[in-house]
Image (cartoon, rainbow, N blue to C red; front, side, top):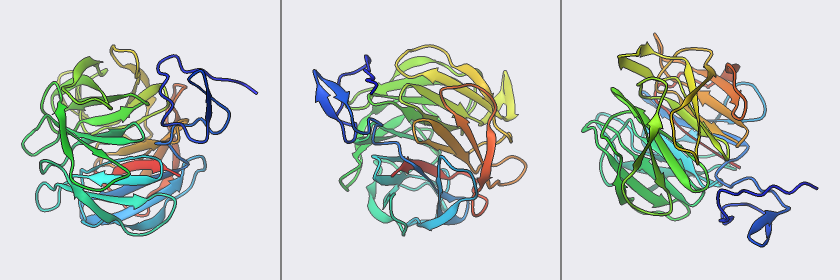
Length: 316
């Protein structure tokens, strides 16, 4: 038997099926519970469809059910059993939060509302609390939080360092990182179980927005997006990575199979999958990578229909 000690934190409250010895998780399944074997994508332009895949396989997605409101440019996160989808654009910006039980299939149920209506936002989770940050159309810097296992309206958390549309977010067991938005390459971070304003983390390899984001227990990845000038312009296939507990600039990881923006990512803590998006047209493509390596993405399969701007989460 091997023993893994996480020196970054002795908080093991988000580890599933483990016992403790001197604050260290021993035995059981020590995968943090906001990851899981099933990946979900909800919504997209004009659609309310929720797709799902088994992340460690390859193949086409299957139908899960429907969101409560058809919308796009939304964001998703989970506690491992419940997935939540927040915000988005319908005829205008939306404040809807809805949720599903990831292990089942079926339609989403109303959870509550964000503090402000907005789409093009980013979301992450530590397995208990979900955060929603940034977004349009007012290019806000607002961060909201919810307790995923309960229902109700979101509460103000604080602010991102800069306002903007199209940030993406990922997390480990303590820290959430928001990356990019229109005309910016900023990375911002917060400690999820506190409240307060974000601090600067570093920079992406180039300024872009509307990326897909996912993480392992240590590393975050940001894939695709669109640049609006400067070093990058147009739709991108770039994948960057960071070490979440270390501040600094992102590093090149590899490339997606198709350059695109408003794709959405999720992971099982080992493999990340990125689904949907738009290049010259709306796409149904799903790619995958192994997060703790580097290299180009590989084709996984297809969503059940094209989806520009879905939200994504994972669980079991």
